[in-house]
Length: 447
Ligand SMILES: O=C(O)C1=C[C@@H](OP(=O)(O)O)[C@@H](O)[C@H](O)C1
Ligand SMILES: C=C(OP(=O)(O)O)C(=O)O
Image (cartoon, rainbow, N blue to C red):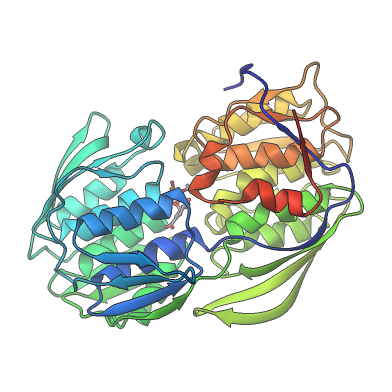
């Protein structure tokens, strides 16, 4: 959706980007830290929690169900859990804001508790599909009343004891996988998720870390995750690494702005998350890992990035889940590369906070890029470093999608006249401090 609005600020890079920055904590790990700590018996401490609106929505919902969650003066969070099975009936509807992860994972938690809850969200979340979790959680015995099309607002009535299931994921979705595993935590016996295409594995790593009996096997190919229910979780000290999905934006900015050299510190590089950096390297991007180490059970490194001439590639569809949220900004990089970039297998991008294939295709076309929108991906003819141009200064409608807003902000650095985004407020869902971080690297805003 593109339209003219008032006069939003435009980001520019009048000089090469330079400096060292840290991005906020990983969103997926932050949600899971709060949820698992809320189900442990005792006090957990979380350092580096992402204080974005999506994670705060998770915290508010868990508080409404009896967990005590506090932010200390030192920025660390303390959670006093209620124990698996101990969640209480919330008094009012749970407002999930813009957050698909909060919604789907909490539906899983509630599905095996004897409580009823209503879920509401913003206009973006209210059009996203929930049938993908309603189906397996109904098999476990939960009862749902959803809006037409299986969307929010919806009501869930959990069942305790729930029925453990073996479920083969029909879509490659870590949210669906996690919803079932979380429901399985409070179901008697063993719940199994069969995952034909691997997706981010933070739930598995963290459930094990909290003491759940969880096993991974590979009988005849697909990954099978088995969790024993009626578990007792032990409180943990968690350090959340920086979010690779947020690091993606300064990394692509530094590749595109000539002469830039930056370091993004403390970036989580779990192999189920880090494919964007591999793809950018395959395009010719100078991205070097420094000080590789482990933080909170996840591989982490500082990324040194230098401006580079990029070349288009074919992105293998099987790696899509390990960079699913990074495609919007990859499309921006591809649009500045030499030659064609082809992406496939990305139907899931149509059901994120916005239809990311449609919005990126339309927005890039508005910036002078030749782009073909296919049902499952984009084909982009790169401009070989020629700045984005258009007849007027485009104003992109973010359509309540933080990643669209941030991607076109980065595109603005590589444009002749600047590209504006109508509404930057969705950025606070995942990346508070985004604009300040870009300014600290040398970017400027002009009206
Ligand atoms: O499990 C998670 O934390 C997430 C999984 C992905 O969603 P899907 O499971 O819908 O692919 C991703 O897009 C989202 O930002 C976070
Ligand atoms: C898809 C995303 O998040 P969620 O599904 O949690 O709204 C995202 O952060 O890009």
